[in-house]
Image (cartoon, rainbow, N blue to C red; front, side, top):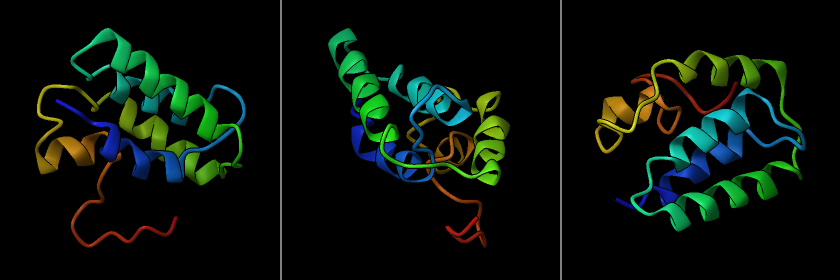
Length: 96
């Protein structure tokens, strides 16, 4: 299963130069790739893109709140995407 297109919404909310909860969350989503080389490519891209954007404390808190519920099983479902921060809860906006 290819989750690279799904990782972009996480990256748009979670970019930062050093390892933080959002980078950890992005890497966790990358681990759902089927092939080890795809996992590595995804994680490298996450690190690279996060290095160029600042993240707010609210965004960091949101990422931290998603870490425990995010799992590869069900990631291709609406609830799984919500659990990993790839989609919003119904009625939520994109603005922090």
